Length: 487
Image (cartoon, rainbow, N blue to C red; front, side, top):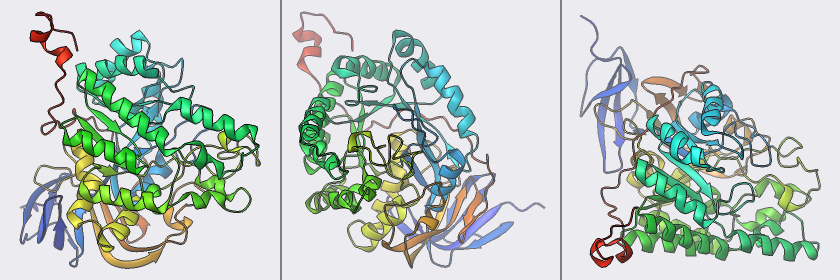
């Protein structure tokens, strides 16, 4: 008689977004098939030893094998990026597939299908849309949605990416018609350009002035504007990398009032301040990202919003550009801050940092950590078989030692970078074993996965059951002389 279970993980503290309990779980054919107080058998038995057994992380904001609008390729491809994610406790991720001006969506996805095939963990894509022609809007995007690519990102800034308000409304309308969710990078383009001009005429171009050039008000105004545009069309919106107390408060208020709204912040906004940009020489360039890191008061406010549920997730925004001519300094080793590649690595540090400074420090509960690291992303982005521990779900799991103390170093990242912004930070808690669909991919600091082991997964529309939207009188047929406006 064959063994009914491929693997049994026993004697663990099982943690979900709702509860934690001592128990076992069984895996068969890559899926969780049983969760109980005790489960016998298993072709392989893994002793969790009282450590935390939780869903593997879902990294929902990362730039992997992606060219920037300026043509700079990230340092990590889908092999190195997925390995780094796995060592950080993630069993799947959703990087961006970026359309640049003149490209078709079909061309973009064909390119990323080749790139993604190297991944050691399961993967999907968010599209970045920068050239929404009629063919893109009404033919190519619907085909992508039908394939399960149900989210895309747009920008309110950058000349080669900014769609303008009218372009935003067009693309939000298409998203609504097809059940997709629109992600948006929110900064007021005019404010940023004006600040850049003011600094340039004064010769203030060192890395530290990057933080000055993108004021908090620029983010807050753009967040508010993007939300109002989405409300007009009555479609869900996801605000990425919120970096300001005012921006977080706008999100909190609008969600409370019923908007179909989701949001995230990132570890760099919780861990770093603009003081890092003022390091000697060009060291500060390593910490240039947009929106910029800010101050300690902002950190405290963002942690408050993390704890209170303003954000669905804390995502890495992994944007790995090496500190050399291939990345940060493509425009020269003494380039002014506007020409330094924007972004920082962090995919391997997202969950260890959040666990250490969140759970261990008492800012959030273990259940909140599970929600922020996996379960909420699964619900928001339609990962129907991932992010939860229950029979029938993919056996995407991570076993954590909640007490192991360690110091973050570049070597811990397992990426293709030459620095980590978290260098030297003391961390408590570490993922010791990570599984993807029942297969062990990382175990006690060793990679067990093979290149190309990951699979692409399509996704469903976002879960909107508790987000009813905001009814606008302009779209009430009874108030418009019997004419229902198309939405």
